[in-house]
Amino acid sequence: SLRINPEAKGEQTAAETGLLEKSLGKAQAKLRSEPKVEPNKVTAPYQLAKGEITNADLGNRITQMASELG
Image (tube, rainbow, N blue to C red):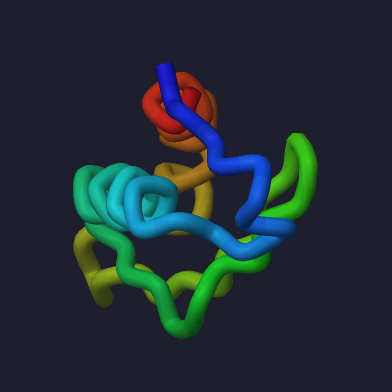
């Protein structure tokens, strides 16, 4: 389980960023900028590796990413 610091006040912690980057790496995608973390929602602009994965493939991976993040 992921431990959240209540004093962070909306700022993401290094552990949260690391888990997201790890999940994106498994999906063969990379972050284009810092993700926006909100309660029960993460918005992350990403770039797919050309010729290796499609948006549809990433859509199929989202459920797995959500379970990896907690």
